[in-house]
Length: 407
Image (tube, rainbow, N blue to C red; front, side):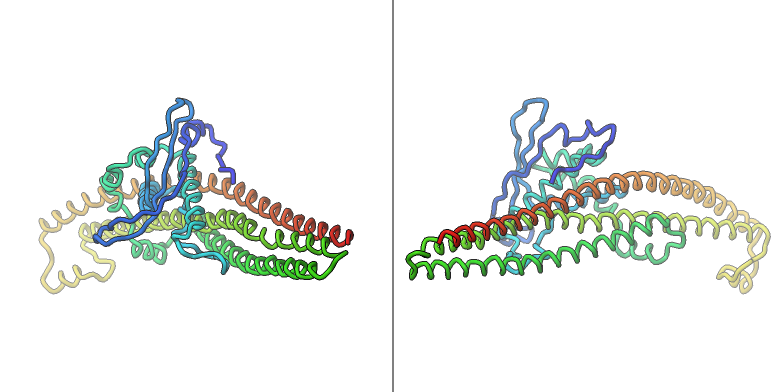
């Protein structure tokens, strides 16, 4: 699939236009993990080269877990961006002849392609491509993890419980983000169903093609007892054997298109991450506004000596007597300072929220263009592949017909 580059004025500044980035190979390794236990893992060779400088190729090795660390950093640091997803860690939506083992060479190869695609997605993003941590990921093998952890991004990460709480308690959600969240759920559902259908079709197709090998065997056996018809039957059997064997390459090519669909299956979660962040910001804004209103009410009650609503403080005053004027003045002064601080915080949160919405929606529009381009290209290519496959089937039977005609 040709990587989509959005038509932005500053696209020439994107790293993908200046640097060639490839994940050229994968290597199975054995080492010890954080628990000092031996483990087997796959390392991936990243090669980079500056396009205009005619520079030599630089290379370094990264584990999948390091790609995960990079993406988690990008998610937290750029919450308004639809961060490109990583390829799956373990195979899903596979047809029964395909291995689900994450060490299987074919799966590792597809994941290598997916990891390269991830890096190119980030390198072509007008904002993400400028990140220093991302650049160091590509160019600095030693000390990179320490550099990421020093950013303190883990401390900025929102907890799942807090996000869930915001989802259910936010009072004025933005309709656009609510609709986007619903769309991402639907997109994920539709692509999941499409991948399941494709896996079932692949199973059936594999069986149909392999059964054609029986034609080859039967024609070959038959040719042995015929004199005039022998050569024709033998040739027809050969065409059937070739046809039966071709399904392995066909379904391997199909996996490539399935992986393109899976990328957008995982993109759905990236969309939801942006929506969740907006819900959290909206919830914090509403809580800040509610707290400010409460403090203003307390200040008014102290100033007028009237209590509008039931409160513990009101009951305490009735039980133990009213506060002295000096105590009330001191409390009013503290509240006025808190109100001023609260108003500044509310103003800041409002500005932050507006900036987030503007930036997020610009990136969402960029993502939509990319999605429409990529999925259209993938579906057309898949249809072309199916047409080609059918033409090959017709050609096999045409060849067989000619063989039979010569008998």
